[in-house]
Length: 485
Ligand code: GLN
Image (cartoon, rainbow, N blue to C red; front, side, top):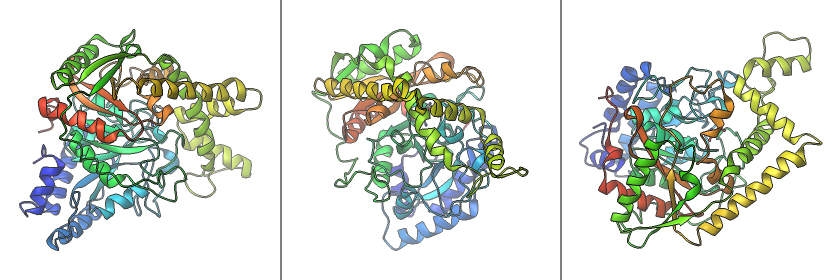
């Protein structure tokens, strides 16, 4: 049962071969057995989840089921969920119980999905390894001595270890795609504005986007159907007709033009990853796609631009955590200013403080033009590179991450090394474009390799079509880590 797709589980639920209570119970049992060695979940509340499962079973019995009714979904702990602790991986919010639901959570609830638990993450989603969390690092189910990627590493590990059939994450600079790649699952970051950010704790508002994580492209499509949609409470939410992301899955890939940027295959890319991605390209050619060499000339500037813009926005967003309204407050202080200082000094971890300092610096008078404004201009150039590329090709293909998952602790003392591994993912966020990662083989140490498929604005269905056709012809996405049986 643990390897079934959402569609198969949904059919079993509809035919009463399985109840949502049984399915949820079996996920909870797997969490109890496997999670002590992985640390993917921060909060599990069996009573709450089972109550939702019972409600889902009632909907199914009444003939009112939708595709996700009764399906347990793990939520990155950045999504506010009413009555659930929502910590964002931080001591600052370690005791915060949300009084309301994020839009995505409302949508999943309305679809009849079961909230299976809140997953571990880098503190405030700042990181690429899920090691900066207040609740300790997450371990990669393929090798517990390695990181699962980040910042949605808890959601990735939960799906990879088959503790949850699907999960939700957020992607500001790669945090859905990179952990999906390093943990051997699928993840999709939609076009900016497709999924509402309401109730998704803000990191860098112009880059943040929620999205699904699951075992297959088809599962991602079903999840995205339930997550996407206009929400007046997010001023950047897009008002457009609802789209069925499963509608194009079965189309043949004949004539699909796949752009391969030369900048994504240069120095810094590990040979094992390059080989797996090359093999995947050959598979796409066998499926009828044509390969087109393209150039994204400003690719090398995406990490520097991102690490100016993201911290700038974070420094502003995180100013709300001041010990006054909610969140951590220092137990002892002399006066109001001292309370602010001590609460923030004690409540935030090292990486979050580093970002706040960088962000405050690049926004300060005298440096704004040199750093922040310059980064915004580069951001525009990067978007123009993509606009030019999408006049030549339909999708862009490349590696998601330059290497397979690395050892825990290997990069934590060197922030620049950690930032540089975001090289292939941050550009999509800077441009607001959709991109996804799917498994395409194994590399060093038997660790999974991820393939990135990126598209023009609103090309999610086209990307999912390509990924689904690839998955019909290959079985990388069906592999399960040893020791998670
Ligand atoms: N690794 C990137 C960062 O640390 C991206 C994180 C994310 O997408 N949330 O900022």
